[in-house]
Amino acid sequence: MIARVIKAVLAVWEREMYEYMSNLHVNAMRLAVEPLLFIFIFGMGLGKRVVIGGVDYLYFLAPGILFMVAVNNSYMTISMRLMIARDWDKTLITALSAPVKPFEIVLGYVLAGVTQALAACAIFIALMNYFLGIPFGSVYLVVLLIIATAAFFSSLGVAISMVLDNPHHLMVVTSLVVMPMNFFCGIFIPVTDLPNWAQPVIEAIPLTVAVQAARAIALSRGNPYLWQNMAYIISFTIVTFLIGLLLFKKKIIT
View 1 (cartoon, rainbow, N blue to C red):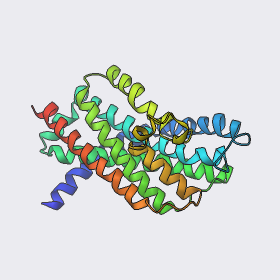
View 2: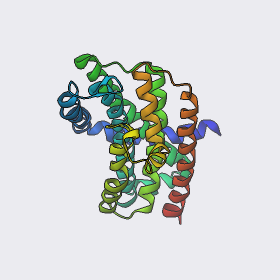
View 3: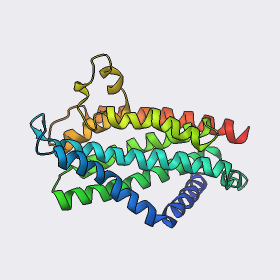
View 4: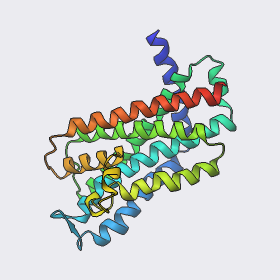
């Protein structure tokens, strides 16, 4: 039973990774250029002029951009791929007739989102470390945070893609919901600089928790609540995954 589930999940994952690798030249350019633009525009431009918490802005910014990379390569990729698989190439219907169960399909997509996010983050860390000498602290802990965060946003991508009917609506939701997270969840400025009424809301978002935890690791600052932070993100991930699975069944099967 377990072996069959693993085989089915890996089959979905393998197909998505094949699609990803078949467009590797485009993905590689996007992976390298997009985060580096933010680093050079904000980090290099303000890095020596702005100090936050006794740290040059570039060192403050890098862990945040790392998780923006994780979000972009999990949520955006998976939400669009699922919409294409549902409405254009009809691979979801093909998979269900295999038969592969909805749980296995959703888990396969989430796993693909996590894998792609890890690959993108690995490239970003390597570039930052090699060219700018920016440390990210314990790679083991940072990777765990990336996996948890990417799984959450991949699950969110599943849920949103099952609610919306076309890519135009997806772009609107991305612009109004996901993109603001990149600017308000502590990536570019500390959450404490936001209005007092907004801080509790922003601090409750899993991306904020991940960014602050990763920044503490990168800057070698103690975080006695690291594992509580991890459990918090994982809890959100499980709930979002189950919601995405429910919406998937409702949209595809019924």
